[in-house]
Structure formats: C-alpha cells, structure tokens
Picture (tube, rainbow, N blue to C red):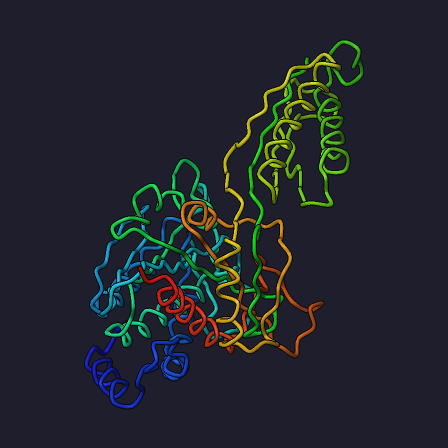
Amino acid sequence: MKYPSSQFIVSFLLYCAATPLAADGSLPLETINSLSKDLSEQVVTWRRDFHQHPELSNREFRTAKIVADELKALGMEVQTGVAHTGVIGVLKGGKPGPVVLLRADMDGLPVPERSDLPFKSVAIGEYNGKEVPVMHACGHDSHVAMLLGVARLLTQMKDEMPGTVKFLFQPAEEGAPKGEGGGAEMMVAEGALENPKVDAAFALHISAIQDAGEIGWAAGPRYASVDDFKITVHGKQAHGASPWMGIDSIVVSAQIINALQTIVSRNLEITQHAGIVTVGSIHGGLRSNIIPETVEMVGTIRALDTDMRTQIHQRVREIAEGVAQSMGATVEVQIPYSASYPITYNDPQLAHEMLPVLEAVAGNDNVKELKPVTGAEDFSYIAQEVPGFYISLGGKPRDKPLSEVAAHHTPGFFIDESGFDNGVKVMAAMAWQYMLDHQN
C-alpha cells in the first residue's frame, strides 16, 4: 500500500488555511469533525485491506509494517517489534501537556469467513501447529484503521495540540500462541507506558450488537477478569465390568463439575457482581469398557470483582480436592492454566470527564451507558497501571434485528462501516479533551 506524502502535505496546507482551531482553547470539535470527514474514505480503505489480509496473534507482520510505515510518513517517532510485532508511534504536540495513549489491537482469529464481501478473507495461517483459515472475526481490522485515521487527524493539528499522544498498535489481544508471551501484558512489561510516561489511556471495541455509530460506555468494571483452569483427576484403572476394583476418575470428574456450579449460585454475593465458572472441555478414557486412570478438564473463571475472583479460585480448589478425597481419588488444580487477564476497569472519574465528549461527538441519543459483561479484554493490563477508559462503537446495521446478527468470533461476523467516523472523532476528541483538562 502506498501513501502519497505530497498529497498529504497539500491537504495539511489546505486544512491550515480553511479550518482554524478553536480560538478560546476549548475542544476544537468543528476541526475534528471536518478532518474526520475528509479521512472517512481512507479509513474504510484501510479496514478492507486489513480485513482481506488478517494475521494471527504474534504474526501480524504485514499489518505492523503498514502501520509503522504510515506513522513514519506522518513524522512520528516509531518503535517496532514491541512484544513481537507491536508498534508504538509518538506524536508530540506543539504545546506542553499530558501524555495520552490510544490503543488498537491488530490480530485476527482462526475462523473461516462465510460472506460474499469482495474483500472477504481467504487467508490461511498456523495455529498451535495446525493449518487454519484466518478471519478478522472480532473487528480488530476496524480498530487499526480507525486509529490510523486518528493519527493522521491529530498530526494535522499537532502544532496546537496541548500534549503528547502515544499510538499503540497491539498484537495478540486474542491470546498469544502456546508457549509464547504477548499482548498488552508484554507491551507494558517492555515499557510501552514509559518514555514518555503515559498519564491516561483510551481504547474502543467495535460491537456487532450496537447500532452503527452508537457509543457505549461504563464507569468501573467493564469486562471481567479471566483465568483458565485445569483439573486433573487421578483414580485407579479398572475393567468397566468391575468398577468396584478401581476408582472411577470419570465419575469423580462428573461430581466435581456439578459441584463447581454451586460456587456462583451459593458462594458469591451475586447482587453485587456476576461471576462465571465454566468447564469447557473434558477428556478421559479410550474404550467403553475401561475405566481410565486419569481425566483432564479445562475451563474458565470470570469475575467482575477482585475479591470475588480470589474467592472463586479458592472454592474451585477446595471443591475439586474435597470431592476427589471423598471418593478416594487425588487431584491437581492449576489456576491459571494458560490465559489470565485482570478486570478491565474504567476509571470512574475519567469516564465521567469524557461523557460530555462522547455526547458532543455522537449526540446524546447515540451514547448509551452499558452494564459490565463477562467477556474479557487485555486492555486491563494497561488500565491497571494508568487511568483507563474503554468504550464500544456500534457496528450493527441499524435496520437489522438483533436476532439476525452473527456474534463476534463466528464465521458470519459482519460490521457496518458507517459508524467509523464517530470512532475516529471520539478517540481524537477524548485525547484532546484530556490534554486540555490536565495541564500542569
């Protein structure tokens, strides 16, 4: 993909002459609206290109190169190879002020695309040693495209910008490949929030169940923590016709699974926050007439409260060990087993500071306060280090009923691109407003 730098310079000069910033030092929303409108076609072009060429976690080589080339063309300080394929661009404003981080995730999923889009993905990748189809089945292609739009927009305003903006393009939000680190946790560990030190962070996620262009927000917990667990039950192998001669690891496992369901229903104060304990996979045995010695099960724990998260972990261990002991078996419990993300927490003060910005950009009727959900997001690693605010942007065609909408992470996932303009504007406006409000 080529980027006509001469055309960009001409556009910049025309902007300077025709679109002055707010003279009173307030949020220059008119300028942001105008520049975003001019960029809307380019944002869609980027998104369709990324959609057609998705890449799996920690393998976002093409995407990262396009992003880095664009940021360099805008004159930013650019760092590549962060947490494998992550890219960071730093845009210094013409005036001193806070440092704001804007984040987009870049990875696709091992999902086959079922659509008739002219830019549908036919990409193939490797996932845990297997050849798989790859699709942007969660909308990260749109996140990258919109944040590149924000980068262009704010570059045109940088002389008057009261601070610094870090653009963070993150790999592996969907989870690093087995045996690899990655994602926001690794980017933070490698110094993404330092040099310059970040004061606040913003991100958005496209939503297939909200009307296109609608903004969703919440203060406090937004997404749940996630901890995978593995329980290994050790019994005593026996012939299926003589179960009294063994210790049935399958029956023990069944009792453990049933008992785990009492954690949420009987141990958590569910009027405060939700929690989830799900066993998603269980494996044991080879034949119908052999009681196996060992059974393995894996599952996921979700929580919207830190104390509840700890409580669930404790009860999973107690139940598994107690049931196994009562039936003569032994058990090993691993928490976390693979994935582990903290709660994604929206700083309440920051959320309420930004609410008027959301309403100014999208209109009061298009801004909805949402309840927390038990999905998870690794932006949580950023938001536990600095005040963070994570919003959603609707991508559902407004004339399409929810009953006909394909869920995220499915082959039929579809995004209406008409709301992208609001996404670009709101990210730029939140960054600018924060810098205005937090001058030293």
